[in-house]
Length: 207
Image (cartoon, rainbow, N blue to C red; front, side):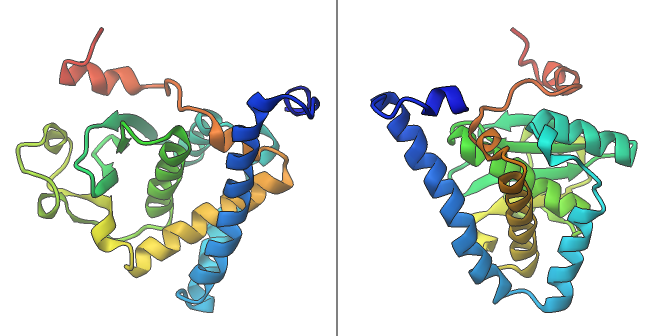
C-alpha cells in the first residue's frame, strides 16, 4: 500500500485514491443516518455481535474473515456470484448443512464485498427470513437449496429495520478496518472461497 502511494506524480493512483476516499467518507455519513433509524438498544446489540466475533481485523481479507466465521460457528459459508435482476443485489440462504450467500455478478468488486458483509450481518444478527419466491421466480436454480426461505437484499426493502441493522454491522466492520489499516481490502475482488466448487459444480458452471 505504501509503495503504490509513495509517488505523488503517479496518475494511475488517482482513481484508487478517490475511491478510497469515498469509501472512507460514505460509511461515516451513513453512520449518522443509521443511528437515527435504529434504537439505542438495537445499536448496542449490533455492536456486541461485532465484538463477539473476536476477530483480529489486522488480518482481514474477506476470505480469511469468512473462514474465521466458519470455524467459530462450525458451519460452512459458501459465496458465489449470481445473475440477479437489477433490483436484487444479494441473497443469504440458510440451507440444512451450510449458509449460502449469493451476490450480484456484475456489480463493482467493492460493492460485492459490501453485499457479502451485509448478508453475513443478516446471518449473525439472526434476522427473520422472508420468502424468496416473493422476489425471485420459483424456477430460479437456487431454490433447490432452501424451502423458499432466506434473506434478500433488494432495493424494495432498503427501509426495513433489519436492513438498517445490517448496514450498521457493515459500518462497524469498516470502522474496525480503518483502525487496523486494512480498509484497502474492501477494494479487492473476491477470489475463490473454500467449498464454493461444491455448489457451482451442481449448477453446471464447471469450466
